[in-house]
Amino acid sequence: MKNLYTLLYAFSLILINPWGGSRGEIWTQPKVFVVLLIVLSNLSFLWEERKLLTFSRQWKVCLILWGFFLTVGAISTLNSPFPERSFWGQDQMGDGWLYWLLISIFSLTNRLLLKLHPELFGCQIRGLLIGGAVVAINVFPQVFNWQIDYTATNGQSIAHDVLASTIFRGQQPIALFSHRGHAAIVLALTAVICAVAWKRKLISDRTATLALFLILPALLFANTRTAVLSLIISLSYLLERQYYKQLIPGIFIGLLAISAMTFTRPLDWNRVSVAQVMSSRSPLWEIAVRGIQKRPLFGWGFNGFGIAYPFVATPNKVPEIVNLGQFSYDYMAPNGQVRTEKIPSYKAHNWILDTAISTGILGLIAAVALWGYCLKCAIVSLNTDLSAVAIGYLTFILPWFECAQYAQVLWLALDGSESSFPSPKLSILQ
Image (cartoon, rainbow, N blue to C red; front, side):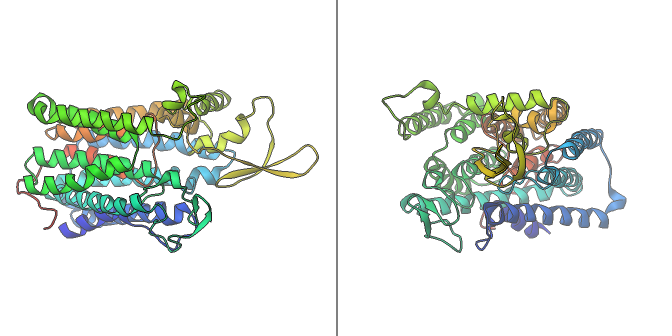
């Protein structure tokens, strides 16, 4: 049982399908499949011990809040112009209504299981640390050769800077994900989990050093400023004044790395602006706001930005949409011909706007209530250190987005607030 959960949690970060035909089939669906296996394992063990189950007040409130969010999401999906996209999720992002139903069951069953078997939490942490270390190891070859993507078409190109798997050169190193940003947040969160386990004496100094020796350089190579910032904020919250001597040089190195990442970006320095340097998302945010104004109550369905984009990108003209693809949409031109336009992004790159455009203001209220309650429970619990993982995740998604390739890491941390830490030290190699 313990080894099973260690293996499953490791695979939830590293499993890919090299023979997949799209980004979703290669990188997203395998990881969601592992989450499904974890859910089925949870349900199986809970059924065997169903007579021992107890439902705390915290668990019941979480059940109600998940139910509220999923109900609003179901209404948004039914009212969506493309309900199938809302139900299944966009291919690469994967976080449609069905995915959030899976995550809700994952979270609720995991809380019950950890209540019965708190020792499993250590096994889950070990699995994530192993997964994070493997992700880190897979970054390094890609730093030297951007054409490595670990797929069946590894090394093959369809353009000068585009691989056959549709990965752009600027998106490398991706490790075992479809974008370097996805890999970066997983590395940042596993670094925080490693720090939590070390602080709580769950792992030895040697194990923590080995894990961070792999993860931290890989995070810097992933070249994602928001992930580095999330690590700085979460570690500052976790370690506080007690470890200020270690924090000060770490924060300095992190800020130096963020500065280097900023000023080494490919920019046109003849027309450079603050917005360019800071990767301003304002054009996407403006489109998202227009989408929210058009459907304020229940939104456009999950992954709503990509659904709403064809209808709100040009405010004075709403085309007749024929088809919504993965990277483009087809519309009927005035002359009767079907034309194709690209969708520049599937997310508004702001968690608040993305939630509001997907599930409306009601969905945003439900999501904030769920998030806020679970975070509050983590902060006031005996396992308060776990809230550092949630704070790092929230720091990342506020200017970024959620994706089915990594969202499960957050809910493990929040679920652990109802369990007690196991006492024996863990080793990644055990």
